Structures are given as structure tokens and as C-alpha cells.
Amino acid sequence: MDANRLIINEHEGILVTGASGFIGIKVVEQLIQKGFKNVRCLVRPSGNIKQFERLKDDPQTRNQFELIRGDLLVQEDCRAAVRGVSVIYHLAAGTGTKSYADAFLNSVVTTRNLLDAAVGNGCLRRFVNVSSFAVYTNRNKRRTQILDETCPTEDEPALRSDAYCFAKRRQDDLVIRYGKERGLPYVLIRPGVVYGPGKERIHGRVGINSFGVFLHLGGGNPIPFTYVENCAEAMVLAGITPGIEKEVFNIVDDDLPSSRKFLRMYKRQVRDFRSVYVPHFGSYILCFLWEKFASWSQGQLPPIYNRRAWFAYWKRTAYSNEKIKRMLQWTPKISTADALQLFFASCRERGV
Image (cartoon, rainbow, N blue to C red; front, side, top):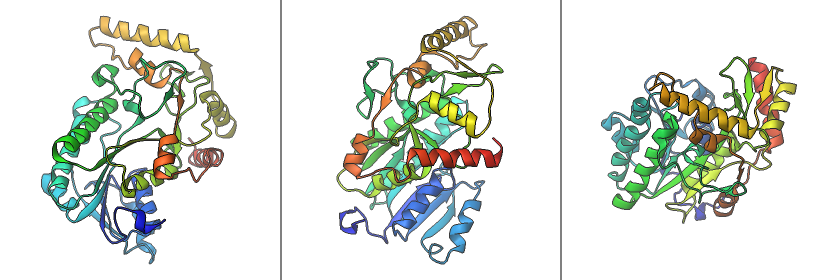
């Protein structure tokens, strides 16, 4: 990497929020591998820091990062975290909750606190906000159109009945507003389905297991996979590459497998189980009826399966990584074929 073409030098401060998470620890490792020597890793007070032991034990890496505890809901913790920092990788988010209030609190309010602290520190050069493919909608997209950074995002995210989508969409809006009103030098990153050892599960884009049998809904759709190490390197490049302020980048790997191919490989290499393929028209009708019955029940049945969700996750579509390759000079270092084998091996080892 040519240091003369980066926006910071190796000694300037870098902050990674959510540093102990599935992707966060890989971002920290990528930064260290690229020679940055002042990486501040923010972990929640209750966060697990076991993954940092290996970096602490290695004499070549132990002095390149600083591990700090903090809560982004506490403004003083935010000010302490951003002090002297030139680049921020904001990965911390509210995940795994069905509550809109909790998701908003832990993705939007925390981001606002961090942004307020960051724009006031006087030395910020780049804020990398980690968004998600979940914010996109395919409702008005032609069947043959590729989903890329120009595609529309969900205009009424609350109606999808997905707290994560709602919070991420509002988080994106907040970052963009700070860019317009307060001059925040930001970049938005939207990973697809991030997978790898440590996250052994079949993603909902393949199908759902809510009825005692696995319903395969993806069919021939490609799954927008990105292997965790490929994803982390793309995120790092988004924070240090010059001339990309206010850009949006999708992260997906090459040679994406179809849902059908992935499920077949999983059954063959990890474990076999009963599944039923639901054609696209059938899955649309299922979501339509579920949505209508949820409305009729006046909330007694949560509308978790609805047409907005169907358009976002199961409508036929394809994906592009052309922009991130062109502007960040990024290519996936681990091929999809090799990444899938590493993933399946991890699944077998953990008995998933």
C-alpha cells in the first residue's frame, strides 16, 4: 500500500467502535496488518475481549492498539473515545433485538452522540458508517436490474416490521444530515450477508425455519455474500482512501452462489435436513396473506412476513461490486469457493 496515497499516516489515531464484534475484530486486525500503530478499540463495558488476547500476546502487535471500555450512550465516553482521532470506523449497532425502541437507542442515539463528539474534536478526516443491505428495497426495481449503490432505500422502514432495517435506515439519514449541516466527512458502507467462522447460521435470504420445516425461499437468487475478512479489508480501505467523501459502497464478493446451490452444499458438507422449496410466487402469496392476517388481527400476529420483506430479501435480483472495485481498488482476497469451505468446516466443528 502506497502511504503517500492515504488520507492519514501510520501514527495518526483511528477509532473502531464495536471492535470486539464479529466484523470489528477483523477490521482491527486489518488495520494492524496494514501498519497502523495507533488503533483505539472501543468495547462495551460488558463486552467480551477474549479475542484481543492473541493480539496482546504478540510482541509485534501489542503496541499497535489500545483497548478501552465505553458506552456510546454516555456522551463523556464518546468524547474520550474520539479524542485525537482522525478516522472512525463505526461498527457498533443494536442487533438481535425486535424492539424498535432498543434498536433506535443503540444504533441511532449512540451514533448521534458519537457524531457530536467527533465533529467537535477538530481533527476528524473520515467517518465510516457501517450500514447494511437491509436498507435497500426492490419494490420498484425492474426484475432484471442489478442492485447497486444507485438503488432506492426503504422509504417507510417501520412498515417492514424489521427493527434492524428501521434503525439502520435512520442511522444513514443521520450521518447524511451531519454531512450536509455540519460538514462531516463521511463514507457509507453497506455489506451484504457477512459470513465466516463465528457466525454459523443459514441466512434468512436462503429460507426460514419457523414452521417446523425449513422453507427454502431463495431458489435461484444469488446470495449477496461477503466473507468476513474480505468485508473487513473493504471497510478499512473506505476509511483511508482519498477523494471518496459522501460516497456509498456496497460490499459483496465475486462468484456469488445461488440460494439453491448454497443450501445443497450445506446439506452435503455440514448436515442434512428436511426442506421444502417454495416458488417465488408462492412465497409472495405467503407474505401477502401473513401481512393481511396480521392487520386483521390488530397486532396479535406480528407482521414479520410481509411484502416489503419479500421484495427486499426474496425477489429475484443480482448484485454488483463494480463501484467498490473501481474506486477503492478492492478485490476479495479469499475466493467464494475457499470462503464457503472455511465456513462449512467451522459449522461442522461447532456442530451447527
